[in-house]
Amino acid sequence: MQAQLIALDWGTTSLRAYKLAADGVVLEQRSLSSGIMQLPKTPRIINGRECVDGFELAFDEACGDWLDAQPDLPVIACGMVGSAQGWREAAYCDTPANVANLGNSLQTVTSLRGSRVHIVPGVIQRSRLPNVMRGEETQVLGVLQNLPLETGNNLLIGLPGSHSKWVNVVDGCITHFDTFMTGEVFAVLSEHSILGRTQQQGAAFDAPAFDRGVQVAQSADGALGVLSTLFSARTLGLTGELSPTAQADYLSGLMIGHELTALANVQRNRRDNPNLPSIVLIGNAQLCSRYSRALDTCGFANVTLAEQATERGLWRLALAAGLIDSSSR
Image (cartoon, rainbow, N blue to C red; front, side, top):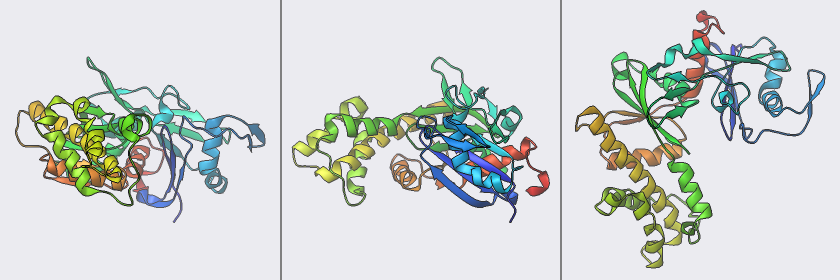
């Protein structure tokens, strides 16, 4: 199959490149640790010139050979590459944001190769405590493209990660979203606090320890908040109730449990409805598995997992922007 598009998911710590054929079929994909905060520094000859620019170097490493073979391939990118610290800033679109229309607001930067890289804008929620996303809006579009129209109404999309996002979608628009720094805080606590001193790497996921953490977050003890219950990850170890290899999974369950308990309360209040919404999860399979387990415990009964959301979303935005022929669907 002939390639039609190069799609880049370019975040803070990683760069994923996809070579897509008609209808968004993935011909080849690559993953590099060349996010915008850790760009390559070793000079390289690009288009006959020595280059030291980190964005150019990462771009060439990710897809230079694809462009050697097909120089006219259009390129689209989402994520932190469009931030103020990125290759070219793409201004945020305000909520309510129709994700299908984001292709009308692409920013472009021309690489040393002469390729124009079209960058997707992020989304901003202007409120007393502003909230922003970059990259997740593209994944949301990728999910919506594969759902029946009626399912896309009043939907909650979850994107677990370092900064987990929970996105309310109504009639194809992002109307509201919440961010939880659960993943990053878990990493900081495990690596740089006393809670990590007694943790040991287990051979496998400790489901009972994880479930216990989720249950504590939901209990009367959990009502005091995560800052109160966190110390139990240490004290349960000191009293011999939690083995060193179980402590990390307990802490993970505790923090995810607090996140989802808060989310459930907010969703019920926001919707003025005791019934919780259906959820579609996007992200790493292992992490989504943990979240699915905890969501069930927290009362979210209908949870599904989406696949290839980023690639599908970038393909749809490229179509909307006219970067590829609509007959390539």
